[in-house]
Image (cartoon, rainbow, N blue to C red; front, side, top):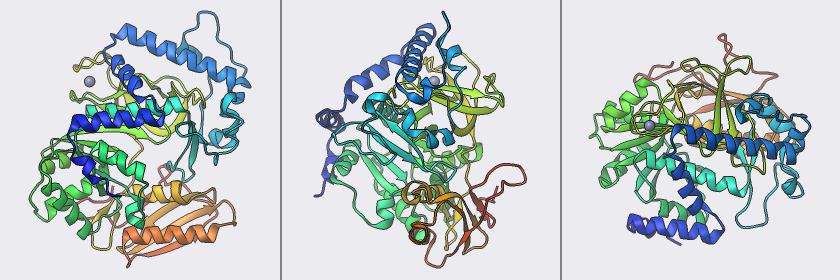
Length: 478
Ligand SMILES: [Zn+2]
């Protein structure tokens, strides 16, 4: 069934239909979205109280209903603030999430969620969320039904911050596995996309013909002037347009996702698309965590849904301007408490104080550690490497591979190194992985699958998952 016509409806009608359908499905996104927006107007003191109360409730629930947290034996001291109580909790690493998954699940859900493969039988309920992450191992978490709606609200809010509030049509330069593998999305998802008004461009397709098609799509729709994009895919498209001296599509706003927005990348996007660029920080397991506002004074943390810490080697708070590890506490996910989750990114706080936009939510100045190198396809265009993480991490890795690295050694030469976790299913998994790489990188690409005992970090001590030794004339390898 073709549902594209939905996207042609007026913005207010699509907005109303979206909320109505969500309500029918059992979601409470309507009231939660209104509550989310109400937080935006809180004065600093009220915000602190609201965050403190939400954080306190989450910590109390964690200790009361999650065996993992209960076993820590922590109790809140008299008159102890929520934030200082929080600082006595251990950091939640990916390893702990992996090893203690079922112990973290809150008691009421434990009979149903007995493994990371659990699926709810009810229509709108908790879901298990798997993410590729950078370790090559899917991090598996649960979002309870309340968190799902808050997560949705964070995404609606980011879109609004970045100039395309719900109902406004926008280009979505995003990774689509369906498109690459030529399978079709489920009907309800197609309906949802049409209502949200996104016009998809596949970021996993980046050969010259694909980029030309993306470019013509942008030009063919002058009525759409916002884009949500993997930042590196948008940069690769911008470089291409500039190099080939093609007419430049004008965009009003670009939401830059899934990577670090360097000043150089921001500049090229602004230059080629005449666009205002908004940095957005999100992940599958923590939804949208922070986003730039039109004042561009850092990324506002989504206070109604996450509590963010930036900590040093001793897990102590870093002052503004000092880079540290980011820890995330999910405030509304009582079914699977995630307290001080070490997401694997580095960041630093902006100077404290209310933003010129009037919002008191804290602001992250910058984020680091999400920079992967781009890969070069057979015809010399640059491809976002997010697709590698996607295929390795989410789609294909079923705890078969433990660690991995993809290195481009020549124009057409690639080496995929992996540390196997178990032999069962390995061969199949590798064959599918290689097929997916081949689709994205080009038929001429020679991909060597190499089993190794371990993957050493680079001389600088940093683990690198994607390495491009070839570079590109327009974007030299970093
Ligand atoms: Zn602001």
